[in-house]
Amino acid sequence: MTELKRIGVLTSGGDAPGMNAAIRAVVRGSIYHGVEPVAIREGYKGLIDNDLEVVNARSVANIINQGGTFLKSARCQEFRTKEGRAKAYENARAANLDGLVVIGGDGSFTGAMLLEEEHGIPCIGVPGTIDNDIYGTDYTIGYDTALNTVVEAIDKIRDTATSHNRLFFIEVMGRDAGFIALNTGIAAGAEEILIPEQENSVEKLMSGLQSSGRAGKTSSIIVVAEGDKSGGVFELARTVEKSFPEYEAKVTVLGHIQRGGKPSCFDRVLASRLGVAAVEALLKGESGIMVGVRDQQVVKTPLERAISKQNTIDSHLMKVAEIITV
Ligand code: F6P
Image (tube, rainbow, N blue to C red; front, side, top):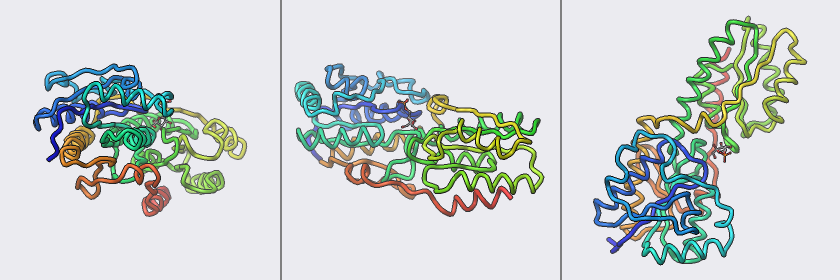
């Protein structure tokens, strides 16, 4: 075990439900192992502005069930510069930080990797994003909660959709990835699912809607990932309305509602597990890695790999989505 005195923890990028549980696990994991935890506010911005303080086990009481991140998060432009990172390092050194746990997505991990490369401060990444698009883990913190939020919303939309002859286009988050769209689309019984990973999505949508009409369906739910490449959900709705004048097309953009809410049990357990694993990795002298779960086991992936590689969409699941909409 490496002799560590202080570990810093921050949340960065888009917040995700379960981040508080992860912070709590880092803080308490540190204390358990005799290390002093330091909480950094507003992500890398807090490191640059020296907005940090030593915390104790009680500082993170009653947050495991709260959405968002009590440390606040930010997408910090200054940290993208060498000068910004040098300033952050100076403050980290002055605060005697022997290691840093960064809870966030791939942008946050890029920052952690550069900070470590340039200044030698050991960094560990904990994947926190609702998009589930980080390589090296089957699940990211916040994804499960977001899935449940989306399914609940689509279930409600279905009630009204089936009461009229309407097509409902529902945009869900996922700037670069279709994991939320594919899984919620299946779970909520969507007739069509459009994701960025799929080619010719408009053509497939049109032929799918024709089949639905022939099969006697009078309303359809179409889940569209934010990052789908067909020109945006509103444009898509107008195009479809022209080809299917018998239907009225309605658009719902679920937006940031997907990022809020109490974390699910799954996300709380995942966050607790990964927060502790991050501290223990630092204690073992490991750095420049992300902790994740694969096949129910905690695994470690170099940050560089986590950033540069992509999680792929399961083609069998895509097929399942097609089969169950006949
Ligand atoms: O990265 C997670 C994510 O939820 C994306 O799916 C979405 O595009 C983005 O965050 C929105 O970020 P912001 O809140 O900064 O607009």
